Amino acid sequence: MAGYLSTHVLNTAEGVPGAGIAVELWRLEPVPVLVARTVTMADGRNAEAFYPEGAGFVAGLHELRFGIGAYFAGRAAGRSFYDVVPVRVRLEANQGHYHVPLLCSPFGYTTYRGS
Image: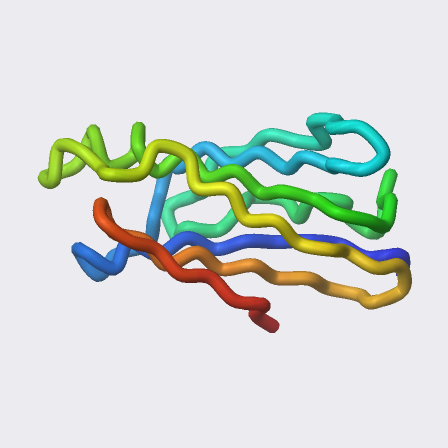
């Protein structure tokens, strides 16, 4: 398999999955191209993996853009210091599953390469 990418968003301020968050995947090399848009499901995960079964996979620098500003605007916090959180990752061919979780609150976030 060429590679595929999934994500998972957790709202650490409330201890719940980040449901309904808009996520875009951009391939940045050689020129920026929007690959896909999705919205996280009730469990905070994207419904379908980006590049499912390697379809259209191109190795190189990519960026996930998480729309947490709009998400937190509709929550008890009512606002977020962050609007869109960009996470740049380098995807290589034949590396299988890439998973990029985002743990966020209105005032901070962290991410890592998951499994």
